[in-house]
Structures are given as structure tokens and as C-alpha cells.
Image 1 (cartoon, rainbow, N blue to C red):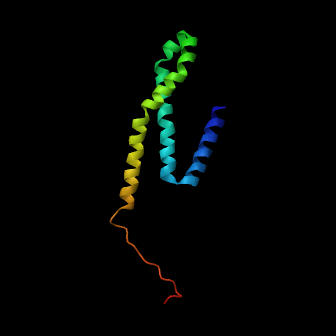
Image 2 (image 1 turned 90 degrees about the vertical axis):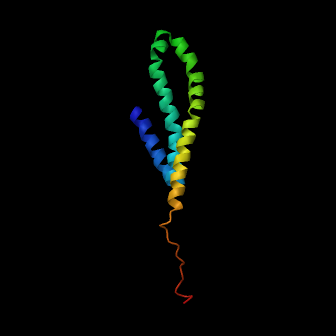
Image 3 (image 1 turned 180 degrees about the horizontal axis):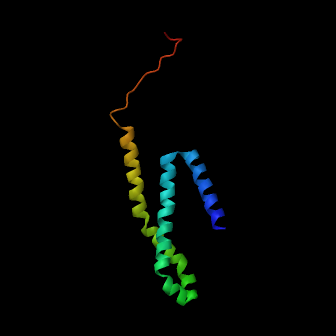
Amino acid sequence: MTFVVLYIAVIASIWWLYRVGWTEALKTIVSVIIPSLLIILFNIKAGRLIFKNPAVGIVSVLPTAFIIYRGSKPLVFGINSWIDRKRNEFVDSQNIVDAEVISKEET
């Protein structure tokens, strides 16, 4: 079942990459992956409390996930800003030569 979910996620990522472009897809993937990893890491660390009392674990999942998601926003914003800066540096590069295309009919 895990492989099916991963397969669907990879197909969706490839489709999104085709649809919006490399940098926008990368920014979207980063904005999903980082909070998810932080939530998973927190749940692994807090697993001792969750497994001692499952009711506390079930009740605390949603608020904890929301707090971690909101807390990871500055990190995600910083990474997305870095991606934008790198893309703008590449676009504004001095090594790009502007060329004007003249069709054969105009000559």
C-alpha cells in the first residue's frame, strides 16, 4: 500500500513539473515535504508518550501538526526565496546575448 501511495505521489510530482515548470514545482514540493518531515520527526520523538496513552496521541495529532506546520512556514519561505534568488541570478546573467531574429521575407 505504501508503494501505491509513493507511486501516485511521484506521478503527481512529474505531472506538476510538466504543468508549471521546474522551479515552481520544486517550490511546491519543498513546501509540502519540509512540514511533513518535521511532523513525522516530532511524532517519532514523542512516540513514547503517544504509545503509553493512545488517547492522548490521537487527541494531540491535529493541534501538534498544525503548530509544526505554522512553525515551519519561515523555513519554507526562506528556501523558496533562495530558489527565486538563484533563478533570478541565472536570468539576469551577463553572459546572455540578446539576438534579434530577422525572417527571410524581410531581407
